[in-house]
Length: 426
Image (cartoon, rainbow, N blue to C red):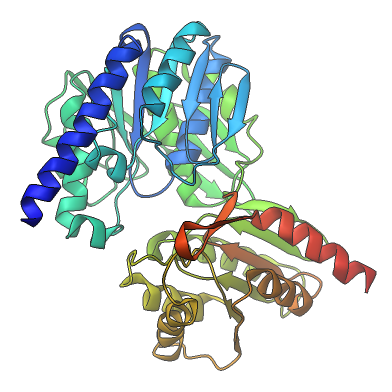
């Protein structure tokens, strides 16, 4: 019975995709569409690819979890859904054609693929950033999650751009394509048509420097993960015959991406908002900030974190892991609400707390504050000159999702600024 219901749902989504493409005249036939998928870095990579193509004189449309942009016009993504359904993607592509865009860069999610939102789109290129366990309850297993991502590559016959340093890359390498381009920071022996290698990497506080084919790139974004995002964008640009010099010019103009390691307060302490919500991405963010902390000229500075975990039955397995990672890297921890949906928020926090308590680095100095605004306020009050506050999980998301399908208007960055002003007044 369950299989029959699932089959009906799948057919329903398939029909939506087909008739939407038909209604809007199969707009992807008039564009070069690049689909970016993976667990982390998709939105940043979409942003980078778009900037490079614009620098090259192209008119570009982009669709990501952050915004929908067509040429020079953009609007926030208010769906709390990276890849909207109900024909929105086809409608977006039609608007891009009307605006005379040559390219559309689309963030493609596993949920979108399950619901056939990628169907009836002629992809010029499929881009693989990385893969880590995510949405396991939804897919049933990590293998099914990876398989869902692979469907984008099966649908894309022309060009595949692949992260050769990811342990899952062989799965994607085995999917046929006319041309395969790999990017790496290591010595890779993987078989690809074109290799893009980042060399002589230097990572400083809020930037990195690396070379590709002798050309120096200075990236004004923190962390090795952003170096990988940049290499991915460079490889994608090369697939479209964009010279490295143009990629360099475009990437060096990017000073930040909304809600992605976004520096909201600089002085007297740093406050950063980031979208990290998986164990691996959280560890990478904390590790990056921890390294900055050790280089600080101010003694005994602290890393203070505010984190939660999504509800609605999503990835319950990762909640203790998030707590364990926070205990490893952070000096002060505040666990709080994120997007509880219909789950009991206290139960979600209890699972995160179990990871803190059972960590190899057990902590007693952590706080449990359900109200996210109060949690942010507490973190700001704990912070002293030279400290770093990192607030993860939501990035620049415009809503907090609670019970009975309700949404509360929200933006971590806005809340930080409001609470910071209160502290300054007091």
